[in-house]
Image 1 (cartoon, rainbow, N blue to C red):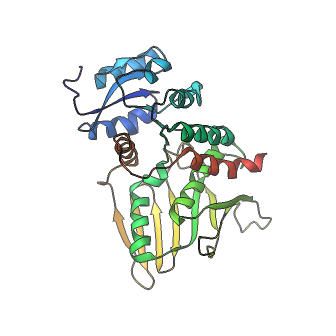
Image 2: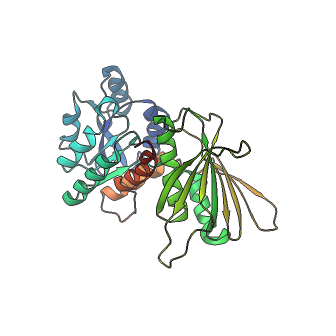
Image 3: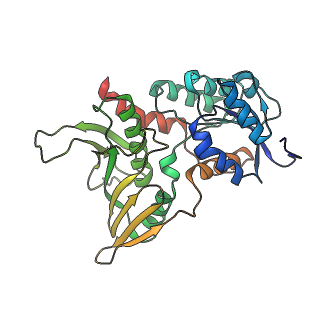
Amino acid sequence: MRRGSTRGLLSLGVIGIGPSWERRYRPAVRRLSDRLCIRIVHDPVLSRAQSAAQDTGADVAAGLRQVIEHPGINGVLVLDAGWYGITPAVLACEHHKPAFLANLWTESPALLQDLAEQAQARGVMLVPELSFRHQPATSRLRELIASQLGPVQQISLQQEHVDPAHSPCEQLTCAALVDWCSYVTRRTIDSAEWMAPRDDRVKPHWRITFRPDVRGNYLPAPAEIVQGPPLNTGDPAESNLMAAVECSEGLAILRGATEIQWSLRGAELQCERLDQERTDAEVMLDQFCRRLVGGLIPTAGLGDVAAALGHVCRLSG
């Protein structure tokens, strides 16, 4: 059923009606219905586009350009580009259309960096999806670091094991974790190195080192990403974040998107369940909308994705 008046709402187009729309972004759109509406949708599979259009009261677009060139929308959500690859992002940049871009981890770092520079030169807002950054447990961790736990000293993460270290699925998941390490520590990544120790007692892992901060201080210990049992599909947006973060004044353990355990040194471990907090999808869409209306909300850029991917992909040459 078509919506009534949309006056005062931000109108968005959607490209790609895949699993992430059904499980993550459609619920977020519903919760933000006082701020945004979906005006037009496109998917290579017509039946999926028609289903989403009927659900949201939107029109169905025959192609990418019909969405991006639509004069009545404020921005575009590219949620499942599929075989289009980076093309929707390039078209959005060329047509000065703000876009939120999901699932960029299989793209070329050099291509993403080039697109980031073009977008900056043209003044176009292209915002990448970085789910791990905005999960409730991560947001709470950042609060605790700032208020009680103190600066990060060491990070140990568990990455689901897919296959050899250079498989695309493993690389894209690791790149998302590398970005998360930079976000949590507020440090620039210096290198990501694959370690395969000969000692069977030491598990193969990624070793992440950081550049010194503005005062010349180094992080006391590198971050490590250790392979663990399969947790999900290998899609960073759908994977569980499992991390132990040692800080100057205590320890935090993240078990998925909505659970964090933490303690100050010598104190009992506290467990917080954050199921009632906003999901990462809702937070990211909210930030995107705030930027569309001229807000100064800081968001990540394509350069952040390119940098994380570059560190990981460099090993496979």
